[in-house]
Length: 495
Image (cartoon, rainbow, N blue to C red; front, top):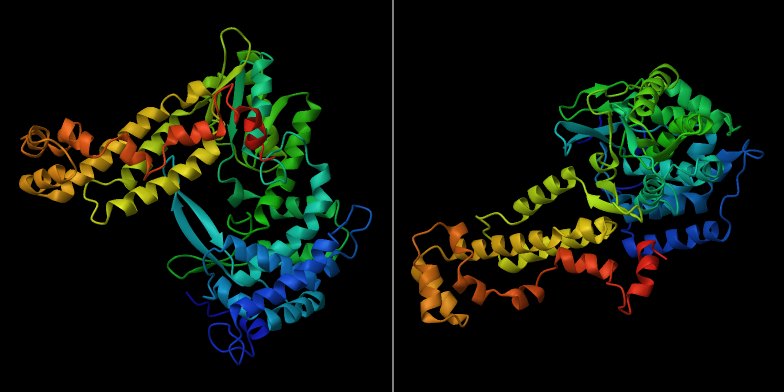
């Protein structure tokens, strides 16, 4: 989609042919090498901005090494085009001319963010979530601003905030929550902020930023990013009066700045809590205290922060009933530890995704199907490796279910019974075993359990071709006494 009101193209691509390549056809690898060399200067001299020296931050934002490092970061994340249709590759090709012009435009105040493309993605719990996709150049500028503002705000963030921060994430959030449950806080206040990213108050956000940023030019730049018009899927341009659209590199930092006020209010009240972006739980010792905290925090969030609490999704419950980043926490009966279990929502999402990856009417090669399953399994297990052995017990059942679905695909692809019979015989199945599987009058799903198909596609065959959820979990959590066990915790923490 092309914006009819793009003010960036004359600035950045004025001397470039359509597509972003500069005259003469610059090689992408050569452009990237130039960007790498330029960014190297920033690596050697990271931003050391502090609250006491933030009156000239725009010069740091517009510095060529910072812009080059930001472009490399955006390129690593890839991502879709914005409304101007320029891809990451287009911008990288034009980097030699783009970065100096962009630097001058930022310093002179001529830079204006382009429109943001709105896309809708389904939410796991139903409904849709709106994402805002800025132009690649705008993502570059947002990342450059992030590089400079993060060192200013990061030291002041609360230790119980874990989302979108260096050296923090789901593992640290779950570990802190486990500590609270182990201490005996057996009730959880789970508060859901309704459409948080769409309802952030611009005035309050800029006021919070201004408390540590003395450069009014940076404040004006952030404000222009916040009020950039949004292009809806039908082409309608909509003005923005509140919210920080999800999809831009700066949005996570701004969300932490907004909710940092909530963090320190919880700290002032002496409450134990864990927050990851806009998801947070408060841990207390009694149901009565939980309901009291729920009511008082609702008043603070809606009155002071001007945000909206989703009463339907907020809850007071036991830790084993509350969904925290895909997990439930259960204190062991002997009190000697906490089990990290997969939540009901996680089980539902996993089953749905596995069905999507292994449809009965799969019309392509079996290897491609298993490759896609393996890719998903590696990513899923890399995150959910945090669950304990009790939580991972169901993974072997999921592995068996995946293998059965793949066997069902094999049966379906053979179409006729005689073709399946020949195939099974070719794979070493006995005459009786092949016949009872191929010529059975039962449905495909029933036949996928027969001896013949299991003999042809056994565990050894699958182990050589497809990842296993259980094996991946064991990779991150080796049994005690094995050589890998001593380094398991280091691997878990990414050290």
